[in-house]
Length: 237
Image 1 (tube, one colour):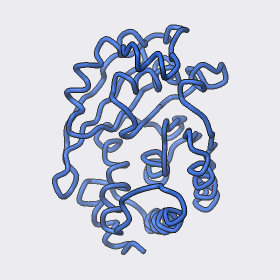
Image 2 (cartoon, one colour):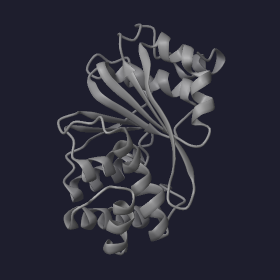
Image 3 (cartoon, one colour):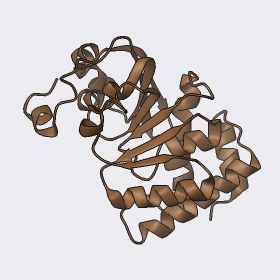
Image 4 (cartoon, helix red, strand yellow):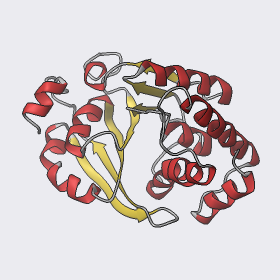
């Protein structure tokens, strides 16, 4: 589906070298994404060149820019949707244990098949972040928690920081408004045990603006967080 030389060239132009094997797996990913998208709503982006840039490179580039990931890091992807960014990150960079969390079971079904086909070994969980973040077996257990365009940053921090172990990182992939969201989220970050580590704007090929925000977990999240969704909406942090 995707021309593999074009795929490798797109990544290379952004300073990321991928192997032929990785390019093959990303090609399979794209084929499965488009096939399943004909039956369940996974993405509005279905053209090969756009999948390459707006899904695959968009997932990998911020982790290249950050450069703070280690091979054994456990990753939790909150509101993962079709597996972005974490499935691409595992394919491109290699990581430790991968956990995918999404509230829609149809997406989890897709992710289970994707993980099996690509050998990701991912643990796929159907559930809501505000519920699982309070469970002892998930709370403060992950080296890296990531989310891509799920909610405003202040709300996203309440969903994600409870999962991050002290010393770990929350990596948020945001659009052009990320810097503005960060200013509004400063109190939430501090309250939830976080500290800003990196905020950097960049562009994808074609000019789409993105913002990478990395928050370090410096102290445990207070037990009362995360609250339920209604409380978050009524009284944002």
